[in-house]
Image 1 (tube, rainbow, N blue to C red):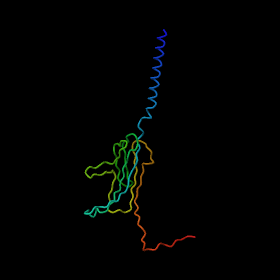
Image 2: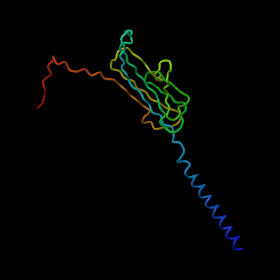
Image 3: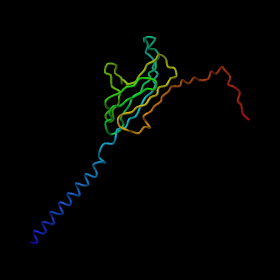
Image 4: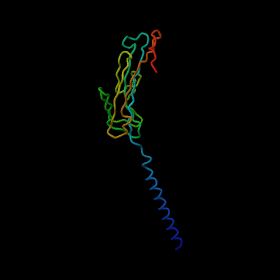
Length: 165
């Protein structure tokens, strides 16, 4: 009788420890799950100078561009990128760590979803915003980029007189 009681107690203890282990795994499961998706807008303005032998329209030009990257942990669906007073691009989904940009094997460069090319490198700007089906931190869903061309002062023109008291 003593052996059967010990065996019963051992089985109850083993069952209890199995239940505790299973509940600990279940409680830890949400911490191991992927975090929510997070859209981040990126953009810029690049000035390019052509190579010797280029046509005049390729001699000096700028590219204004924007894209969206999913910096979160889960797929973002129905993602839109809108340039203010410009085009809008929508994709079905962006997986974690991926962007709207695609590698163009023909031109051997990244093709961005919103991209414009202008002759010359005059001061300009580009701005826009992004959103998807899932709510995410809106702090990085708007972007603005601009260029400034700094011209050094002409040393032959005298500086204006300093004013002060």
